[in-house]
Image 1 (cartoon, rainbow, N blue to C red):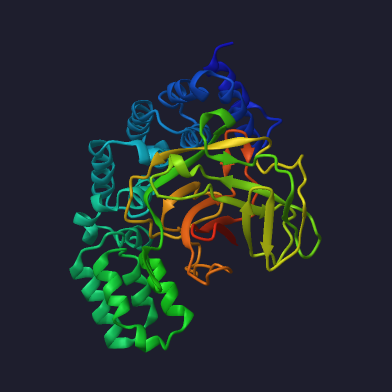
Image 2: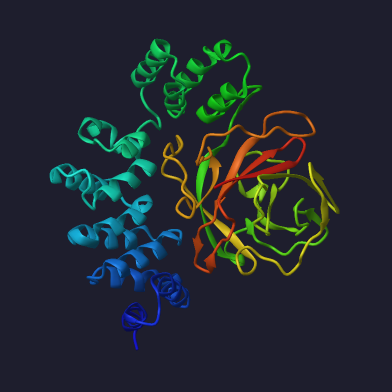
Amino acid sequence: MNSSEEIRRINASSRLAGPKKRERIFAYLCTLEDHGVPAAVEELTVTDSRYLAEYLAQHLELVAGHPAEKTRAAEALREHGELVSAAARLVPWLPEKTLQGFIEDYLSTGDPDAPVSNVLYTIGIYRPELLRPVADRIPDDSIRQSMLSGAPASEVQHLLDQWEAGKDPYHLVQLAFARTPFAQEALRGVRDEFGGSPEWETLLELSGALPDSPLPAGCAPAYMGFVAERSASPHQVARPVSGDVPLCHLCETPAGHLLTLSAEELPYGLTADPTFYWYACGCDGIESTTVRTEPGRTTVYYGPQGPADPDFSFAGGERSLVLETHPNQAGVTTRGVTEQSLHQVGGLPRWIRPDIHPRCPECSGVMRFLAFMDSARTPFGQLSLGGIVYCFWCDDCRVSSTKIQY
């Protein structure tokens, strides 16, 4: 039985519900050469099944690289009007010519809810500059939100004028999402109107600046992250740990290792490898943890600590995080969605709800954003975090802080 026959056999099974079919297809593809990318692409170019097209595109979304193969699949889906929405998963790897083709398709339909609108939404996430010239022909508010990323000074001034006219904080949130130096200066100019409240700090951090430091709120460049085999990258995911870790203050279950980034492999000038933990129990009310990790010693702030569980893994075993340059270096301005936002290192957080950065318990400085990990699918199964976990780091004090949003 060849790969296409096996994929179709799994998809046709009457004994498997949709999510189980997807898991089986993912697991099978991972046994093939290049994580099954060639097999998935080949089937995507011929299938008429909307569900199978979505499963295969989802699998390709989880694997770094292979832009030529993913472009071939996207162009085939573009020709198949009923399946075109699955091509949204492939947008980060598509050349500008192909993306412009999808934009033209959307504009020519005259239907803001056409299946190709899903592709346009994702173009806004990764390449908002391609949509800005046709903004007046895109009525969808969620797509228009993405175009704030890197917005020109004229748009920032318009939002500032709207704020001055009505003092509606919504306009300052939109202004912050421009993520430009002009937007940051505009926000600094209205600081006194907030009386030093955390709301102003949240807005400034959202724009990419810090209230008490010349450093930016995040690190550049931004990378997309892909969970892969342990040997694929020096950045570690869900590794076994010994010694103390944070304990849940409700049930005392040990936290699990989430992510350790290799400082020497990143262009951020870090002096130590940031390590982040998250809680394995899923208890309600657990929102953050802050840890200082030194050789042979772990200090947990604001909560109990105790021995790690060496057998626990968020990812079903020790993995790594492969990084690939993010197409949108200004910062994504559409809200994060659990199980859909994947993973990121560097750049700025894709918040579900804009929130303030934590402060370091050692120096009291605002911590810089360094990564987020989503409770998303991986080639090895679900990364079961319960939401999106945002990771912050104070390099001077070597303190990490993680906080979750649902």
